[in-house]
Structures are given as structure tokens and as C-alpha cells.
Amino acid sequence: MWYLKLIEGNREKISRAIKSGDRLEQALAKILAGIGVKEDHIIKALKECKLETKNFDEFDFDETKQFAWALRDISKPTLIVANKIDIPTAAENFKRMREEYKEHLIVPASAEAELTLRRAENKGLIRYVPGDERFEVIKREELTDKQKWALNFIRRDVLGEYMRTGVQHAINVAVFKLLKMNTVYPVADVSKLADKDGNVLPDVYLLPAGSTVEDLAKMIHTDLAKGLLYAIDARDGLRLPTDYQLKDRDVISIVSAAKKK
Image (cartoon, rainbow, N blue to C red):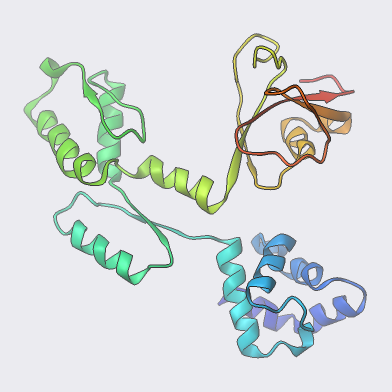
């Protein structure tokens, strides 16, 4: 396991960093930064393994291995997408997967069904929004027998059994459940929830839980962040400090000394 190899292979370096004044999570983060591991991931994994108060030099191999596994799960959460759920043997295979991988989220999906629906929607034959549990045929007279059969199959054997094709649902689960991202809507006019051109809720940003007003400002434009003063909550008009932690579906206006882009 690569996490374990990185930690075990750099034990002396980590120990030296700690003796030089680094906290354990800081020392480990320097070694693991290349694979996207952050200090908050390490802190959470240490607590999960009950190692947060133990001296690193006293970690035995089994404890380090346990920590490495926990850290991998926390920093790289896994979603299993069970594709081809539309084939005859899929239902039984899906059942076995859920029994085998009980600790993982598993989403049944049919990429072929999703592609078929999107193509039919693009041609104006049906009305369908990705992720919806149903579609509406609007030009039945233009459908070939093969297309009618395919749409009936999808309605009966995919949507009828699993409610959706699973493709958009898998993306939603990955973004909002596994990565725990929040949707935040920046606006210029808090009274109209619009930008300077009058477009209502024109933009949405995905930010990790714990992100602040300052993080959002940096994401929008570096100059906006440099002159950042505060933000305004569009719902109640309250002034928010730059370190305010944003919540899912927040609608805010950023006030900056710099000219907004």
C-alpha cells in the first residue's frame, strides 16, 4: 500500500521534523502532500485510530498500517459505480456486490441508457433532464421501432427497477456525500439575487466543507481576495467576516476594496 510505504520509508525524516518543532500532522503532511493528503485528513485519521496523543516513534507497524488505511479512506473516499445494470445478470451481481462491499457506497448505473436518453433528448424526441426518474416522449410519430423498443426497455427495466440511470446520481453522491462539497452562490445585488447585469443566480461554486468567505473570494478572482473586506448574507442582510465558514446553498455578496470582476 503506497500510503504505508511513504510513511514507513520516511520515518526518520518525519521524526526529525517533529523534533525540530513540527506537529505530527505537519510532518506527515509534508511527506504526503504529493498525493493530496491535508493536515485535517491526518488529524481525523489519528483520532479515528486513537493515536493522536501517542508519540510517532512509538507507533508499531500494525498501528502505522491501521493509520495508513484510515488515512487513505478519509483522503480518498471511494464510490463504486455498478455499470451495465441493464444486462440480464446485473441484478444478482449487484446484490453480491452490496454484500461483499458493505462499507462502500455502491450506485447502480446504466451509462448506455443515459446516453440513449441524452441523444433522444438532443434530437427533440423526448423531454429528459439528466438524473430525472422519468422522461416524456414528445415526438412518438418520429420514433423508429428500434427506438420505441429501447425507450420502453429503459422505462421498464432501468427506471422502473432502479428509479434512474444512475450516472448523474453517482456524480451527485461523489460530490456531495463523499467529498462533502457545498454549493455557494455569489451575487452582486443581494436584493435581486443577481449579478451586475441582472442575471439571477448566475454562478455557483463548489467548495469543501469548512471553506470561508476568503476562500470563495480567492476562487472568484485573486484581486477580489486581496481587497476583501467582508460579505453580506443575501437571506438576512447580515455582515459576514472573512473567516465565516460557508454553508451549503449560501447566497452571498462579497464586498471588496478591489473592483469586482
